[in-house]
Image (cartoon, rainbow, N blue to C red):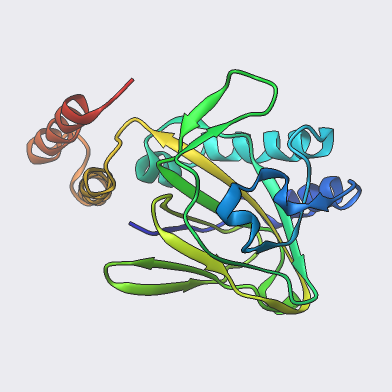
Length: 227
């Protein structure tokens, strides 16, 4: 399941985030790469321990904690602290699959990467190329969103970032461990939750059928949740 989340950050928050990270020192993006990814990845990145990355990452995490669409789609248990990358001058990230386990350097914090997230911090007109291309059973999805918008997709997906041939593509990326491990189960729960929300808006949250569907939703989470 691939889900677009519009305006996770509004334009003011995007500008604040960019002011923080643009003032930081960037390094070779392979500081977080696995063995295979290191051969495919050409970009710059903020180090995990960068105070600039932590400050901007906290801004993103605060926004996500108040985003109902993110909660509905991800059912998050743990979120890896957001990282930041920059592509320019033909840089790219060729086909790869994200590591199954991500550990925060120097700590015992680690997650199973069920979902990958990319939050765009450059406007699409500011650069050429740079599309995030995600492959699934329905083919290839090409994603290039407005600054402040985010896309969620299964971390098990084969994906790549196309070469940036003009300007610079700046984004935040991170991973989520969901309370519901299987993507197909999360997709069903997301569809059910969105349907319940629409019906509640049309009929009222206390309507018997809406209450019944809400109960089914929560009982399915009880069946599938891993805490």
